[in-house]
Amino acid sequence: MLIHLLTIHPALCYGPLEEAILGRAREKGLLDIRVVNIRDFAPGRHQITDDYPYGGGVGLVMKPEPIFLAVEHAIRQGPYREVVPPEGLTGPPPGGRPRILLMDPAGRRFDQAYARELAQEEHLIFICGRYEGVDERVRLLVTDAVSIGDYVLTGGELPALVMIDAISRMVPGVLGDQQSAQDDSFATGLLEGPSYTRPPEFRGLRVPEVLLRGDHRAIARWRRKEALRRTRRLRPDLLLTAPLTEEDRQLLAEIEAEEGA
Ligand code: ADE
Image (cartoon, rainbow, N blue to C red; front, side, top):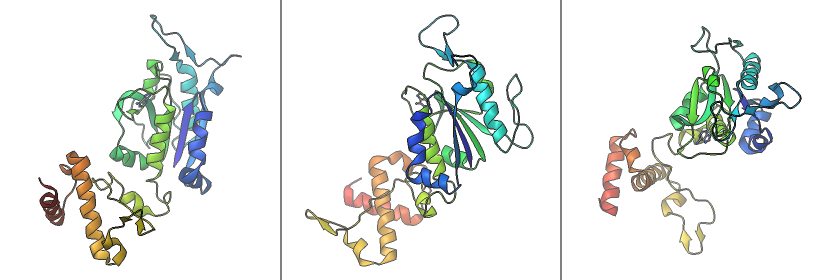
């Protein structure tokens, strides 16, 4: 997967993309992530990327020209190579186009299903704006305006990194064990249950016996039950939409009997 991250603060982005799982996936060539400095596309000696808002108001607004040029640069490096016409890209040209994502607190809320959808794409282009905003004309390029939650950050870099992390781990091969992405909290519609490692007893706190015995059917049943228990306690709303089997309903009945309805 090819990912371009367009920003005026490239140094903010390097660390999270170079370390740990994402760093290894990039080394292996599973992810091609390119951080693009929007300022490199700003003309003039001062390479100005923002300016005062027309009509007055607080804060500066990011100028459209450097962002258009940076997006066009990114598109030319990708598999679709559709050059952006002056009036922008308003519809899907034949043969597909990259997803061009604007980080925007007013955008569509990012969640696991949205991450899964974006993980199917070949080319993602993230535009990180400053929180006061970008010139409205940039939206002509944008396929998705995305928010990571109902709070306002100082810029789009952290939201883009959060999204890239969540999307990348669903790209085949990025996680050593593909199973672990499938069992994740939210991927199954439930929260993940508890995990334990050695020692079997720590400060008087014992690991549940069933995990030590090696009866794999009993362990699978226990894990499912504890995932249901945790979801019921912390996120009961998820139980309304999670795909539950008849056995799950039996387990929930047991949990209700144990804990009280
Ligand atoms: N930019 C500032 N805050 C944001 C948020 N919550 N989500 C996406 N982009 C943002």
